[in-house]
Length: 343
Image (cartoon, rainbow, N blue to C red; front, side, top):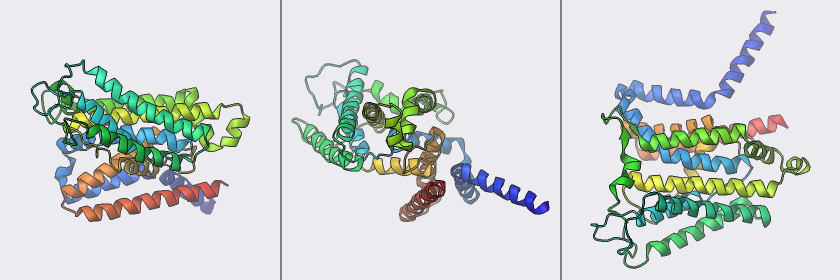
């Protein structure tokens, strides 16, 4: 009887660790760094980590849409860069000496922002059509888009009179989206960009869990052939999903330009790899059909804690890369083991 009870307790503990492994890792990381330097637990450090994580969260949520369907998106970073350049190029102050569009009047802020987000949506739409209608594997389709978008962004960025100069002199009302906050104290205020990330996370959670699109997304990723047999218009929903992901990348690009106070055509470089890594570490299955919003958020925070926390205690960036690589490989190996055991 004792043996059976111990076995059940062991299974329960193993199941608990498996289910909440990502959160356990995050807590252990924070505690480990805090033991080395207790200042890491200060409110200002937490605020900085959340500030740096905000745009990455939005990008990772967009990537999660694609991964859950069983695909991948390598164009995310370049869409972020294009959207950042588009929005920044049209939201400079009149007094700035090197305006991208010297004769452009001061537009209402929402117009360039919408244009930039729609640009991201349209690129996502193209990705979806290529994947769904032409049956091009997502890896190849988005790889091609990644290269093409970077080329188009570079041509736009090189237009006269800018000619590849970093875009600066952004309007204060636009910059405040990335640097402003609610609250008078710089330490205890809540940055607007963090609020944007929270709102997007809530909306995406609702889409994942409470809508037909979310239900069909998991069905497509779980078994695309069964989804077709059950009457789901797979092509249509894949196109929707890629378009939504593109819009999220576009929003992230706008906020990244506002946060940093400028933009270049190299913005967003390699962001897609960080987003995919955060999703995988956060429990989004590389085989499709599995993934949660809290898991994605935890995955982004883990990498933010690694980047910020290890720098904070003076560990070489090269060690940070090694640690991140080990975590990514371990997460994929763990995911594949679960996948094989379910067969």
